[in-house]
Length: 457
Image (cartoon, rainbow, N blue to C red; front, side):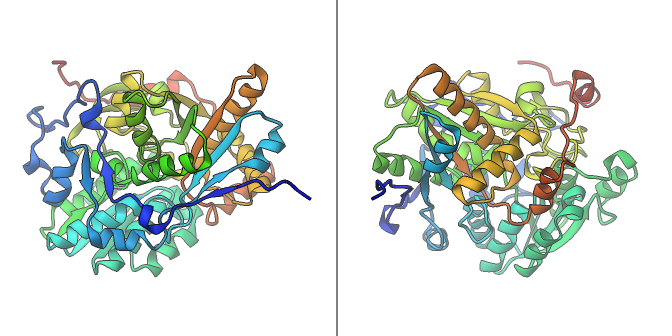
């Protein structure tokens, strides 16, 4: 008779966390503030008011360690949360590794990713503020899907600018947004001044998250009943995602294990932050001592090849300046399959802890990512979205290293979504059409030169 091995670790609904965790109060030094692009002075609530409701602005600058999750948001969360944690026994066997590998699976949400964790509260707070419509951008389509879903629950209109390369390659993701009631445009579009200006350059035709953000921000900032919603980067977004890590801490305890390595994919930073920030709290308290690794695409490596500087969050230069690791707001990434990671900058808070030496980063080429994805699908039975394949590739690297060194290694990663709408990418990989972009310092130099000069101090 085969030995019983527990693969799945779940929580009861009553065990679901009811607070979001804010990392900022526990850091040894505070992150630099956002700056007004005109005065270069710290941006105040009034600078964010045209884009966000006051509840979210207060969360953005909060010094409170925990913020209670509103009841109506918890009611929606319970549709799929707590999400499961799995031990990847079959992947371990395929690798012949001594490492133990766990993954927290967020693909069980209605949108198929972790994005509703912040889309739902953002829609809720905007509804409380009397907002009628939300605008946003989306790269892979997961964030746009999540916001369209959340807006449908709170009777809000939702208008989405989808990055051109994603719009062209993922028609079913667009259709899913439309099923939830979202209005979707290809970006760059002719609907905004930013879209018309940036779209006039053929080099911008594939689009980028920076361009799509400019279009969505322009519409929100010029209409009093409209606000903007962002799916990553900002502090309040990262905080909403910490329910992932809070659940994972409880589930790892049920598994009787403690991670030595925690790996997450990073584009804007929300998935990585959501998994790691609660564990960082425990490390700062001296309870655990894992290594944290951010996995990013080699063709858009803001942490490993960018500079730490104040830059715009969008291509047109309409947002406040944020201190972050950036490749330059003019950078147009190669149209890789991981559309959700095609962002020129990294979340300021993730950038800050990287500068403090609290986390590491690795840049992974997409062919290695899809090799890991196919192995994972054939052993664990889940087809991952292209974004978390970067974390899977790093997890496999670390598992193989553990076998070579003999060190006890327990790897935890967040599988932030399924790849059911990304099968064209798998088709490219399986049929030899996928290539890795040849990157060099020259590749990034032009956009880095456009970072605005901001005096130090």
